[in-house]
Image (cartoon, rainbow, N blue to C red; front, side):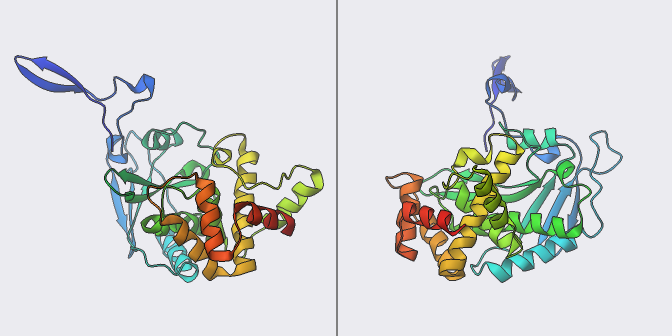
Amino acid sequence: EEYVYTFVERDGEWLIAEDSDLDSVGLQSVRHLWDSGPVVVERSEHFTLYRHPCGEKVGCVQLPPDFLSTAEEALAHVDRHWRVPWRHKVLILVPTTTEELGRMLQATFELDNFVAFAYSTYETGESFDLAGYRIMLNWPQIEGRGSDSIRAIMAHELLHVATRPVTGPFVPTFVEEGLAEHVGKAGDSDALSFLESEIASGTFDGRLPRDFEFVTGDGFDIFRSYQEALSAMDFLARRWGEADLRRFYLRLGRPEFAPGTSIYHVGKALRETIGRGYVGFERAWASSI
């Protein structure tokens, strides 16, 4: 992770004076939950959760008493639907405010449209390695939801964590988010009916969503991108089977540094698993709605 330091010389020695002098130009030092104030730790079999204690100046989040039990249920759900080994130890960070979360993520987009993030850091080196997998909750957008909704949110984020060891730099957002929604909702999806209504209103363009469409536009635009991604992964699993969906993701995640765009590598992985390229799959998916 990155820190941006200002050094000053005092009496012949160089000292660190500040780590925020370049915030105004977007070069921010990393901030963790514990940089904002004290933290308390809660644990279950597979989870370690950090949040601020109540009564402190920074404020706190009042989690439901069964939150970690619900998270354990979500993890068991993911294991039933994602048959690829992964390390079942997960860190959850719960900032008190959306502003605190945004500073931790160094986000450059509006966070009010999102409930949680699966986050990891990139280990620089000769290979594509992600480390420090964690889930960050945007609790102001989750507070008041029931256990079923929280379970679905956690299953979605846990699928992201479960795929980090086998992902790669050419996996586009529509595959990442579509797969997470596909596993998280596991057949309990209204994406098809939503897109049918888009067709009826003339707003469905038949294209798989691009990466930027998941973070730009208003909340409904972003919701549409998620529904299209979910529908595409649902279609792949329904038409060719869950095993081919997993093989497609594993094949797509394999290249680390190679020529070609993300769409090129998606098409290559599709041809090697289901016999269709990117355009052929896109057309078949759009025609299926």
